[in-house]
Image (cartoon, one colour):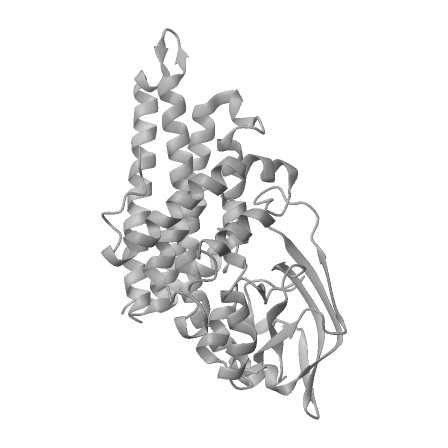
Length: 384
């Protein structure tokens, strides 16, 4: 069974999809269970991904990357996440937030910060969420105050991928308290993680995506030069909104890969196991359940690839990105739950792939904007 077949994928993305599949089979799948159970950071797999030019390669060629476009990234993503979500997230977080700098930053910023990430010499991160604020971009309280030719940053960030491992992060902070201009109150900055006043620690073990590490960051009198401002002051909200439109297409790939893993695992199990003198797959209830899983998956994948094209072309991107992210991630939850049911009591055993997938699917429905927020975006941006 190959649910991630390439006929729906644009032809120019076939090559990167094949590369990602081969890499996933060689490096991710054989090590997934160990890293999940041990909760270890897959350093050696990340290095292999960098050597294979499959990490940080959305970065334009002029700054050392391959310039992968959104369909190529989606094709790669669904392959990685079918193999294992935790390891896949680590691979993708190695360049998290870089798009903001190479789209809106200066050539000097790109040379100093983006090129080393593309060449595998550094890692980046993106710091937006806070302990008490997640999806509300206008409500973030970390501040960046101008002091001469520096910005002084104070506050906290939470759930930050690579907050410990990164060499630098893109940080979202409040630069204005004018409540009449809620969408112009925040800005984005490049913050090296060795800056005085930057302290990060890993968040304690999670139930899912355990091969990926997130951090709690505290910033106290953290001073950075004014040239580390990305774009213009007050433009942070709008830059992030555009960034998340692309990011939500990638998260659709997270959901599709996980859903494919759940269905493939369930399909193999029910065709191999016998009950009452027949294989489980002979029972009509099971056949109908598998049919429902396949229909849900194909609907979500078709929508994701249509949305990918819409976002790539700038056609009401917020609407399509929200549709796709919500559909794909909730499909993953649905089919993983059904897959657990088909596995019966064995589904709760730690060594079962379906148990790992069942845990992992709980995460993408939350990050990149919880799906409740996505429904607000869908309604608010629906064509009228």
